[in-house]
Image (cartoon, rainbow, N blue to C red; front, side, top):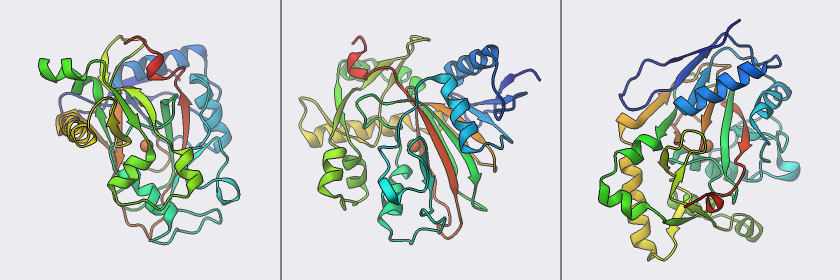
Length: 296
Ligand SMILES: [Fe+2]
């Protein structure tokens, strides 16, 4: 088999994901395969692999080709409450006995934060590089994931706004994103665990050199700015960055593996019937450093 990557027919002009064929992710990859996928990620920001019947061990092995993995410390379910190992973020509506969570279960309500535009783990001092999401069980309809290209969004800013963004530092926390939805049901321990971290608003891709906006619903403050003014500005930037021309909407098939670069994209989940099972497993490759340690 030879790996090939072609653009998915663009619904919009500015951004389209890559469709990868000619590779079986359940098997060990060659160096050439890893290099081709990394190059595809740098070009597209989102890659789609269909018909990949991965189990957790295979997904972990594939993910580790691209760097050290994060632990699922951002999940609200910890310890004995967990259904999956700490190497896997549980993007499902199931409890540890594989039963569908009640509509008002706080784990489900916390998870609804994924419906807001975000970049994975921007609330961690060292945020996520790649996320890899494997669709094990999907509902009959809905539940798309939408991706927005933060490079295109940055490029399309007017000169004045681009200059204003340069050098700004934001505070990111899951406390901010959940508060947007009226979820404040945190324990004192969780409040400490989810304390805000600092991230630059503009970042530069280490390989391509392209600049992008590092936005997320987790961003709730800008250092040195009054909070309402910061939130109004971040909201305006998010509206700009998520115009349809910058967005690719992925319609899931069972056994899709979708891989995205959190440094150059934001994403959000779309609603689905919460009485149907949706079971997605996410592995996450960490960045090598905080955005605060990159050159300004
Ligand atoms: Fe996410």
